[in-house]
Length: 89
Image (cartoon, rainbow, N blue to C red; front, side, top):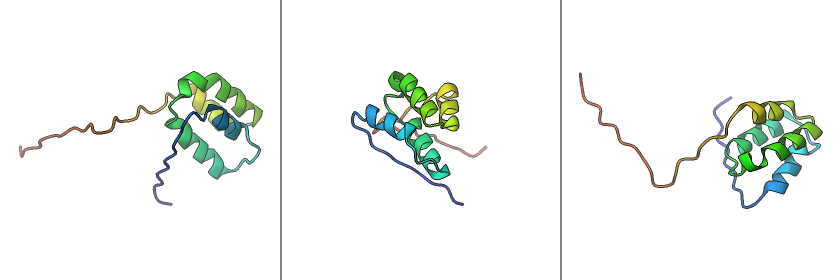
């Protein structure tokens, strides 16, 4: 299986995300998708407790484990970049 990049946009979707986390449709694909979304979710720190409770209601052990143990990614600001000059030797 090749690498997969998942991008997900959010606009004040805290309650919607909580519903998705506690949803009944449990499949490996859905679990991976939710983990990928949570990793870049902008309000994860604010909503962490609610999301943990929702994951417990939906019996999503991997998501509970992720929310308890891993900090979310810090997104790179648009327009920022770094250049490295590599020379021989």
